[in-house]
Amino acid sequence: MVGIVSYGAYIPIWRISRDLLSKGAPGERSVAGKDEDSLTMAVAAAQNCLKDFDRESIDGVLFASTTSPFREKCAASTIAAALDLRRDIFTTDFANSLRAGTSALKAALSMVKSGMARQVLVTAADCRLGPPGSVFEQTFGDGAAAVLVGMEGLIADFEGDFSITDEIYDVWRRDIDLYVNSWEDRFIFLHGYQAVLSEVISGLMKKMGVEPKDVRKAVLPAPDLRRVMDLARALGFDPKTQLQDPLIDNVGNTGAAQPLMLLAAALEEASPEDRILLAGYGNGGDAFIFKVRAEIKKIDSKWRGVKSYLQRKKHVPDYATYLMWRKLVLTPPPRVPMSVSYPSATAIWRERKRIYSLHGVRCKVCGTIQYPPQRVCIKCRAKDNFEEVGLGGRRGKLFTYSFDFIRGNVPIGIVNLEGGGRLFLELTDVESGDIKIDMPVELVFRRLDLWREDGIYGYFWKAAPARD
Image 1 (cartoon, helix red, strand yellow):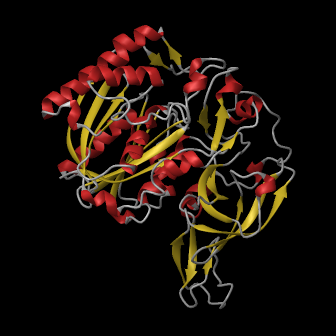
Image 2 (tube, rainbow, N blue to C red; image 1 turned 90 degrees about the vertical axis):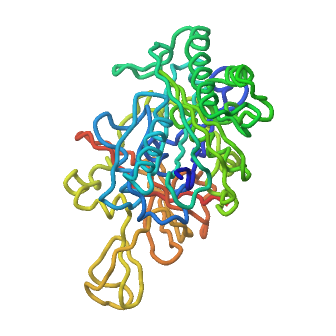
């Protein structure tokens, strides 16, 4: 039997009040930080998904997004490197559709079921832009999710799926567009969203012999709260008890990541024997049915679902800050470009384990961990007697800190890691007044704010306040 082995979600710590975007608008939405993008958010969700799991059995990584930082480069390969996975695995990206997340999930299920892979990690993330002042700017949210698909240690069985394709201009973004475009709202709902999802979900339930009353939670993509509730009623579901909270009021529509994020939220609260219906929409539809196993009780949901992220948040101070983070307004380049210390493409390739996988070394004589890798142990002075050790995603405590005022008051610190090792890193997701000595931190994979003329994006690890 094929199904879900684990899950993970990620919601940025930052929120922006919708009142800042449109006077009087209620609620808030999630906003990726200035050093975050779809790739880094996917890494964060995947880390949560793979917590306490053996990564050696993963044979594939699929990345789904409409906002990959690269138009021509496999982001899934970077994700696999950041997660320190084996090299002999399959990686690919799913793009250009809001249905990319569920399409990647369907591909992973097929790969495992056919025997092509033992376990496949599906990641999905989006950071979409709506035109300033538009409804999209208010309703879009940033976030990510990950699902590990396999055949052993399942927490939910895959029972069946159904898909259809549909050609329509409803919501789209051309290769020359910065913002998402859309047609008239009623047309989108009646002839796109409602028509397609009604057909694909009804088709699946008919195929599987399932009635609405047999479904514990319906996980439906939601452009807004009213539309998804109307759809749920039309399908025979009770929006109050059966519809999974779409998180529109406090997170927003997270694009290709939304179905998998809501699936993670449903699994976080699921009980054995619950049947979960999952759907994705975008120029067609995908629908799946999963049945939860008793093993769901054995998995620690604290760091995997959305609850911890909903409670952990900071507010973007003003609209100008949001525009700068999204690079929608021009700002002067730094007086001292960081590119002087960030390596070339050749050096990045040569040092990829040290940069992406954050590999240090452990002394085979005394066990001392060092980063970056050295030839001589700082404790016992043994020479060239080390083994590699991955440090990415670990936790630790802040030993000391300072600020780089030349680059704009950027906090930097020295972190003592749990299990050994000391790193010199930037601090992120924290206000200067909240930084304290011995503050618990966790390592997070982020994008560096580089000013380069060679077109390279820089990624590295930073330290952020640890979740409680």
